[in-house]
Length: 287
Image (cartoon, rainbow, N blue to C red; front, side):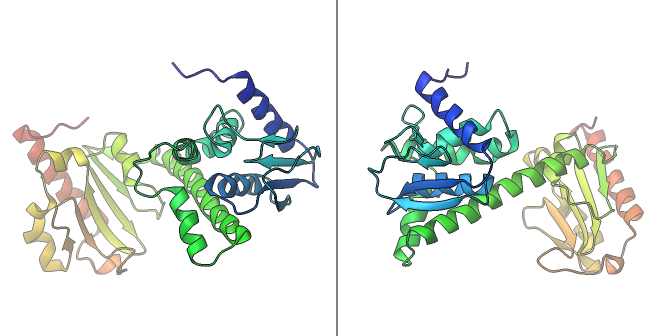
């Protein structure tokens, strides 16, 4: 069961929502010598309200202006600290859950991280946001520079999540026959979305070449595309040493798919036969 928000948290979320609903001109205030909570909180607000002015003030400043929202600040009726959540950034991300779910999903892992580090608790993540701010300062960046870098990351994270949701919808339209899916219309779709629908093999034809990828389930069972090396390698195909990918061209080394040695229907034919041989042996099942 999800933990129920405290009254203080609900009040801060309401304060945040009220500011979002206010027409420009708006302002965003946070403290000077920004830490990760201040930088990323101000950055998120700036992404949500691009025209809002960002100001850096003393940490003991009192924020009372109705058009200004102070983040990682404590004094005044127009501030958000997120004490009961763990961080101001965590509070803002939580506040987005009810009004823009993709933004919440994109940033919730970062919010969980800051909820820990801003409260002085340990964090096992490989890249800690607090360390990023320290690195930016080591490069000579001031408050504005740190804020701008944080904003770039926030924008990229949200854009990636929205793109991922779009790809997931497109994946629902991909036909899967005998466990084999083919994408040949140039659509940008993550393989994971197609495999989650039950595909065992994904074949692509695009402007960078031809590729064949197998699911993690097949890899775990020891099935490898290297079994097809006598057929593919003489045509100049690359087969990954782990056997999960075979390709003629890629985004890192583009090639003309028309020179791969196979038509897309030919690849589908021999891959289907290869997969069905594993089905008959009992090593894999297809829906």
